[in-house]
Image (cartoon, rainbow, N blue to C red; front, side, top):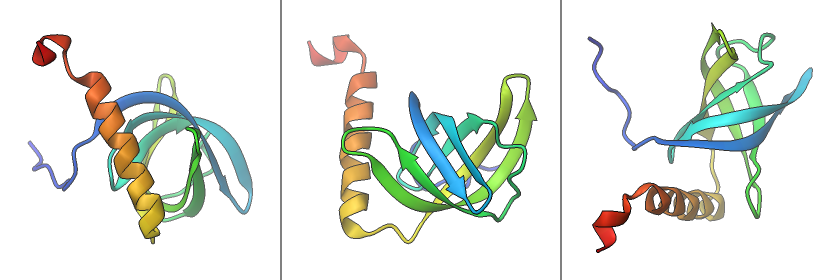
Length: 114
C-alpha cells in the first residue's frame, strides 16, 4: 500500500470547471478539491503530465488560477486528472479556503449539530 503524501484534506464534490492551455479549452467536472489542487474528469486525452494550464472553478465568484497536471488516467467515464495549484495569490487562497469551509460544513452530518 502506498503512503498518503497529501498535506491537505480532500473533499468530494461535484461542480463545473473550465480548463485551458494553448491548444485545449474544455469544460470539466471537479470530483474533489483541496487547498492544494483538484481531481477533474473530462475530455482530457490531449493533456500530458507536467502541462501548465489555466483553471477556473465555476462558483460565485469564480476561482481562477494556474495549475500543473500531476497525473492523468483513462477511466470508463472518461479521462481523470489531478491538478496542483501554482502560484496562488493570497486573495485567491483566501477564497479557496472559504469555499472549502463551506464544502466541509455541508458534508458534516446533521446529528453533529444537535
